[in-house]
Length: 292
Image (cartoon, rainbow, N blue to C red):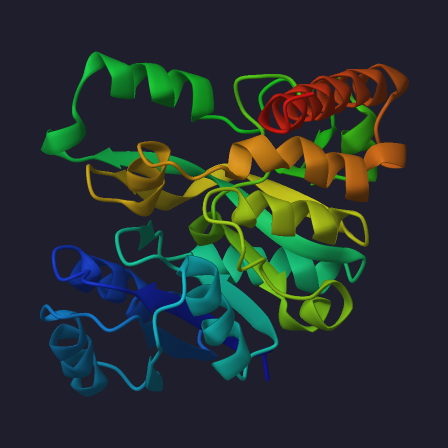
């Protein structure tokens, strides 16, 4: 029997696109699946639509009601409820290509040293986000592995922890070199080693998790679009980017604390310089407040 894969769908008011996501889940060419839905108190018809799919497929569908506590908590609830050997996230507004899970599982089954596999992704751009700015975003973020120098063999690129020492790791404009959760599949057992997604983060928790994993095991990238990633006005990434979320400001501190000795010498110097400037600035503010 092929190992079980848990398709994890964290939801919140996803009525507009959830049917397309569910259709792509039940049409996978891979057979041994379960679908885990963790819902953050949706008030639209999301759960009603999901319930109809229990009559459209023999794939077990389990729906769990989750008390909202941030997106990371909902993602983690999916993982904790999952019974599969592998975790395959599918966000409510994204779509899986039919062979997505089959191809990803085959890669991991062939190489036990891999902890995660990701793929390239296509973009579905909704009309409310069609603009020159969106086109520019896709040009910058369309290929997350652009500029990396890991060899591609049989359409698969293996990324190891030497990524941290490369000049490309901290090179703008992109920090995520792996992929969004809908574009990755990983062994559930890795959470026993590295833990779950950080629930104190709102914007960078996906690739922070990937990099923690990469410190322990290699990651494969399939050089094929196996996921359709939707861009629209109300998606979490877009909403968070216009909020006061400070994840990006704390990213340097995460790197200093968790990855400092993994980085090359120039990157270490730049991080220390940035941190010194921040500490010096805060010290001056504190001195002014105390009249010193």
